[in-house]
Length: 195
Image (cartoon, rainbow, N blue to C red; front, side, top):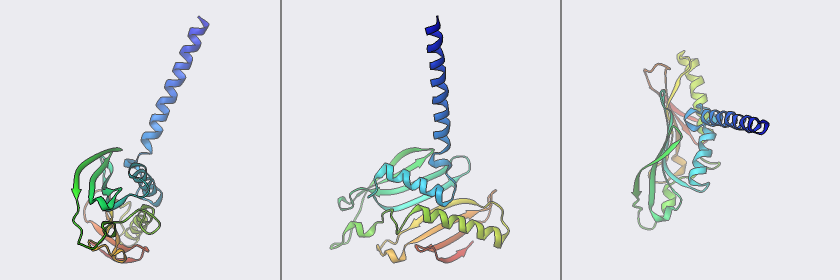
């Protein structure tokens, strides 16, 4: 009888530990990451876990929906010279591939020249930092409390000139309304803000 009670206690303890693990893992998913440097760094880590540290991107967008959380959309490849890319979405921590894309590259050019990688030059931590900066600017200049992320993305020029790449941030009041757009250089300098 004692042995049966001991096994039941162990099973109960194991169940409690599994529930706690599930709660902790769900709360730290990419869909619930804040629009901050640390939050976007966690999203970048998820991208690197899924596609590898050396993946190449042509599009990378983080959209926020109040009922769903963060939605990440990418066009990505691990082998640029194959000219084959996949369009993927991450929604509520579930990856789904939407389509396959075949690129056309001007003769004499390398496909990788028209793509970017997540590294020290372009990274989501910087995009998150600029989102925080934009939010503070809106609070101070426009008296908008708690502006919400609508969209943040890396705008990479179609001609592959990385010097013209930008970080773009779109924020709106917490309950919707006017969308405020911020455009930054890769160094974090504000190009312009409009609405």
